[in-house]
Image 1 (cartoon, rainbow, N blue to C red):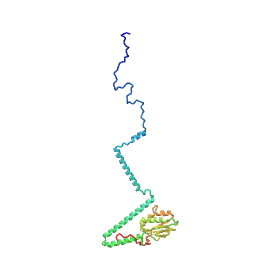
Image 2 (cartoon, rainbow, N blue to C red):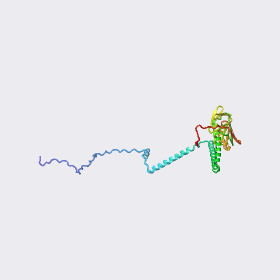
Image 3 (cartoon, helix red, strand yellow):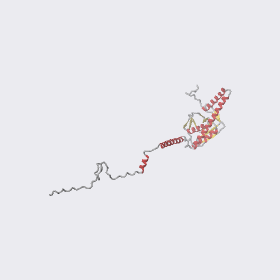
Image 4 (spheres, helix red, strand yellow):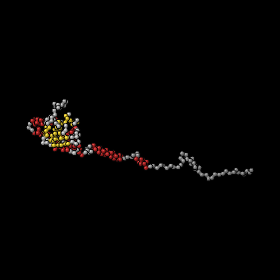
Length: 284
């Protein structure tokens, strides 16, 4: 073995590059904490209903819109109250034409009677103020008032213009309520004194059905039913003959009705004056 023999040379590395720093990432290495890339899923597409719901809720109302909404609510409430009030005050809207004519006629008659009564009271007041002997005038008016109250109470006889209403009921179909309706119609037309078949009619008179007839205040009367009525004939007779009134109602029951206007009506059936058990004059 020769002394100049040298050991075999080790393979040499290629050109050396700069050594990586402490934080460098080696090629192909996965960085710690980083998520591995995968296939990206597409978000589901929203439907039209979902977009509408998202646009409506939660509501986004401005202050101006809120004020307008409150004003519209108040306006609608006011209109509803007005409509309801108009509906409540129109109770006669569904009434028949005959009923409306009768109601209007009664109102006209009552208005006229109230105006006449007011005129009489005004005349009495002027007479008292202008009379030289006021005590005597007051006494005369008291006597006249007593006479008028006696006529209304049925304790004194009365006479004057008016009508005679006669109802003949061959079929026996006219009941006590029909006669009561006739009486109420006459009173509404201004009747001041009424007598039916010899029975004086007063404020507390009542009608009842009896076998083969009708009773007034417990006294039986038979047909024909004759009403003697003192009042203004021009008001009494038309009130009975209005469409849908007393005459038509009785004729539907196959009754025969006649109305006459004698020159003078005499109502001479009397009622005994009743002494009240409990009521006393407030001036005593």
